[in-house]
Image 1 (tube, rainbow, N blue to C red):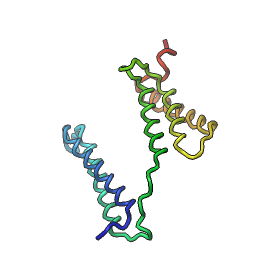
Image 2 (tube, one colour):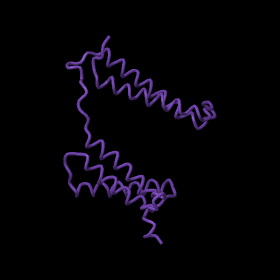
Image 3 (spheres, rainbow, N blue to C red):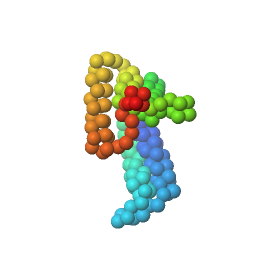
Image 4 (cartoon, one colour):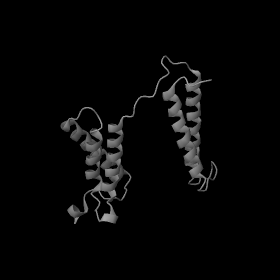
Length: 162
């Protein structure tokens, strides 16, 4: 029984590895039961479901015949680098970097940076569309996290709010 779809096989393998890692990591917390869930209950449940889903995908990849074997293509390095970079920059701008005395720039600036950097991962870049998207995302994030959930984190750079 060979691999009939490489894409599905490796996708399922990633699901299984991540699911098992989460399930094992949740064992460091109190699990509890359905009536009294501990902090490890949800990660254990989610990790187990992800691993089971991965197993189903792997099984399908080995049973269902595909035309060309669904070969895995080359790595798309540009999108990978820009998406990871966008998330790292977002985290640094949102919370600052105390080790180098970089202050927090807040939610709004972090969202604009995230959208601008992530949009460079694609083949087309239209500044107007990117800015509209960033504005909508910033407004909706402000409404959701600050107004509705009342979370306490910087919205604007510290040097602007003093």
